[in-house]
Structure formats: C-alpha cells, structure tokens
Image 1: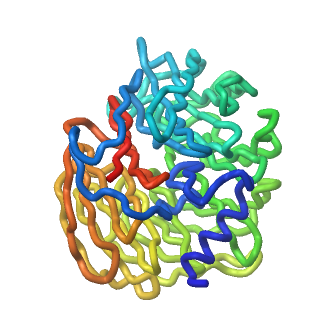
Image 2 (image 1 turned 60 degrees about the vertical axis):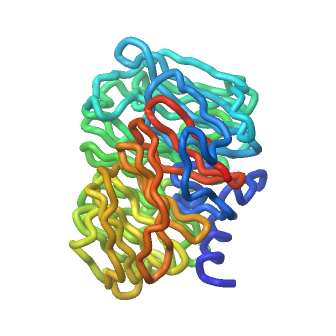
Image 3 (image 1 turned 90 degrees about the vertical axis):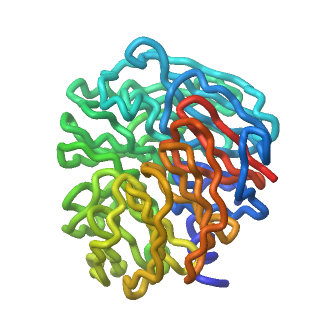
Length: 400
C-alpha cells in the first residue's frame, strides 16, 4: 500500500461507514485533503460541451457542494441583507432539485461584499446534512429534508461578531460535529453531538477573525483535530476537546492546513512543513518557504507532492521532504478557491471563471483551460465521474 493510499484509508475510518469513497462529505472532501479518487474527468468544457447539467441557485454562496448517496447538498443566501438562508438537495445525475429548505437568519448579516452568509461549506454523513451559515445559524436536516435539530449560536452567544464575514466550515468526526466560531466576540470551537445538537465539549479560542476549517488527522493511530489560528496551532482530542499539543508559529487566518506523509503543511504568508511528534510532543519544523504564500487558498498533498496556488495565480509543486520548489506556473486570474487534485491532474478555478488544468507530477505542464462567464470563489469538487463547480449563480456538473 502506498503512503497516499494509507493516509486516505486512515481518514476514511474516522467517518460514518455509510460514506462511499467517491463521496465528498465536507470542505475539500474526505480528510480535508482536496483530493478526489475519480477517473476520466473532463479537462475542457463550455455551456455546450461536457456539461451534464446546470442548475440556477436561489442566492449567492461561497460554499462548496457536498455529495453523498447520489445527492448533492449546497447552501445559498438571498433576500434583504441576506437574511434568507437556503439548503438545497439535488440529484447528482440529473441536477433535479429533490428539496429545498429555508430559514431566517438570527445573527448579523453585515459583511465584506466579497463574501456572504453562505460561505461555510456544509458537512454530511450520507444520512444527514449539517449546514452552518456565517450568521452562526446551524441546522441539521436528514437526507429527505426533514428538520432534525437547529441551533442559533448567535442566540446562545450574543457577542458573536460576523464583522467581515465568517467562512470556516464544520468538520464531522464520528458522531461529533466540530464547529469553529472564531471571531472578535465570544470565540470558541465546539464539539456538538450530531444526533441532538447539544454541546459535547467547547474550547475557548483567541478573539479575532479566523476562517480556517478544523482538520482531523491520524497521528500514530489516534485521531486529532487541528485548530489553526494566526500565531497558534493546536491539536485536540476530537472526543473531548482536550488539548494534546501546540505549536506557536505563523499560520494564515484564511487557508486551512493539509496533512500528508506524516507531516502537516501550514499555509499563510509562507508554507511551513511540520513533522508530527508522538503523544504530547510538539511537531518539529522541517522547512519553511516564503515563496509559497497562498493567500486565501489551501494547499493540497497529492501523490507525494505538495501543490499551492497564490492569490495571483502562481501554481507551485514542492518536494514535501525538502521544501524545494520543483516548478511554478502562472495561470490567468485571481484566486480564492483551493485546488482540487484528481485523475492525475490539478484543477484550479479563478474568481473570473477560468479553470486551469495542470498535469500532476514533477514536470510542469498546463493541459487545458476552460471559461464560464461567472464569479467563482468556491473550490471545485469531484464525484461520480464528474466535476462540480459552484458560481455565484449556478451549480455546474461537468462530465465527459
């Protein structure tokens, strides 16, 4: 078994057994890795070519679609001051809307105009979908659209501040939903019972704007949830929230870390490679590279190599052992979406709707570019032999 497969297999063990390998249960897929086990994906498309379906969405959103059991779940926000919150369920093969549910925001909706209230990506275990909005509204629906439970976190904690907008996504580990609420007000990360919506644990966090998503990793056979905030990197027991170890160093406030080959790759103003320690031991810095600043985008570890995308469109491939940049290629556009690795390729989507497809590996090669005339800030995902792209207006399903 190769190292990449071993890591992916370990991540799968942390999720409910009903999930299939092709499902996309959370932000950046299984293990938050930005990697999909899909084949024969398209590299070029248009409104007329290689498109399976295109569905108009009822409002704006930055959230990625999540996919399980042949269903795609996506969120949106609409109406005056984005106070109307939407959760939609679509059939993966046809794009047919199976159901839609709407909720009124209970928290503040004022934010930077670039973002919106449907910025966090939902999570699913195949039977239920857990949708968090930037208003601190958290809803659990079953796969048929029936309400299981609902939490107004702003109602529970009135000082929660949305400010420029919250975008961190929940992460599901077994029957615990790990919900990040780091902001300038009451700041915390909560482990919420996925069946009831009640808190299992809560960890106080530094007050400040932070959009990073919790990452669950396998460290020596034990699950750890990584919480990243500017200047601090902590690992916790996902069952109890108890801190296991910490590392004080530079971390970004928007991009999320990724794990691979026994290391963590921490993005920000530079990319840092940390070698995981044993037990409570803090990780060691293996290397740092200030030429690999990522802006809003998160890195990807794929087939033994690290891939990053800068906000200005520089795609880089780096040796994870040494930090040596093997190649860098500039592609057109401004980038907020994180890259997707699948089918031996790297997919990067610009805000302007241009998706560049590069060959994965130690030699640089741009395979194709395709353009759609809309704004794209959500990261691409792949499932069921298809590529899913979410714009401000539509959800696209591309397939050969």
